[in-house]
Amino acid sequence: MLLIDLAPVFLHLPTVAYTADEVDEKTKGFRSSINHPMTDSKLTAETLPHLAYSIVKIVPSKAIDIYLELRRLAEERIQEIAEPVADKLLPNMDKLEEQGRVFTLVLDLNDTLILNEWKRETGWATFKRPGLDDFLAHLSQIYEIVVYSDAIVDENLQIKLMEKGVRYVLSRAATKYQDGKHYRDLSKLNREPSRVLYVSGHALESCLQTENCVPIKPWKKEADDTTLIDLIPFLEYVGLHKPADIRPVLASYNGKDIPSEFISRSREYQRININKGHFVGGCDAGRWEINTGPLSGAAIVCSRSSSTYTSA
Image 1 (cartoon, rainbow, N blue to C red):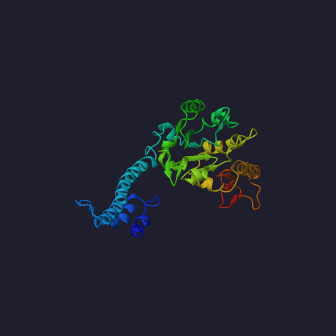
Image 2: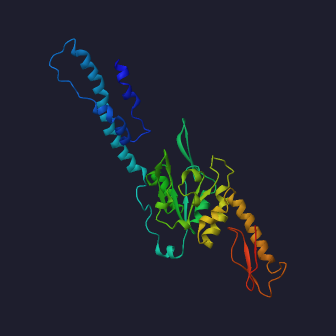
Image 3: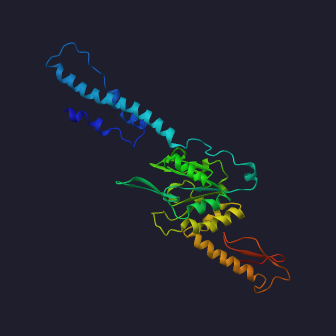
């Protein structure tokens, strides 16, 4: 009989599928039905069943009250850590760099620049991806480089990265916690989104702004890996030529291997540049001018006509 009467309690057991407010609402009817009749002065054969029934209902009611209080405290704490630690994760860019439209290169850490490996015999060890030193040394002259990780970055590692040209290191506290994962939120960087690139071995799964992503192969400790070195020509071209908005440029590379596609477009761009002025129909005594480069296909426009040639 008691089990049947307690069915509403089991049907409304709190679960993480509901918020604290939802649990409160679903169990409110059950908890308000408890009169707490625990004041009987006599314990008789007639009152014992009623007293036992009341106790059995009061205990889960009190347990739900305690749960709701703890759950609300937990939700408040989770909300505090779910958002990045600040709305502006980076200080304002230097005025001269801002005027020069310097781009910001955001790099993931694990499986992108380094690999952390644990062995029973030796414990934790950190391995550096091939080409990392040259990659940072070269591109730090062109970009503002930021390492943005979902891990807690060791202080010694931070120092080594900054010695190699990394300007800022952001760790887990700077990420957005959502659906059980830590995401990089580039909108919190205090940088113009049109001038931000995010390079990662897990780019599309770890960043909220996928339009700024440069996906690369995750590094699994292959000794012959050349991914970082292969990416330098593309990043160098972007950093030096400063397109108005990097996002449509990256969109034109969707589903393609960026280093090899960039080389292909560069060769086509050079071919057009060498052969300009020799297209069928001529240029009406004018001259051909290049107005775009290999980032999104080369285009050559005649200065005295409206005809345009665009590479694939």
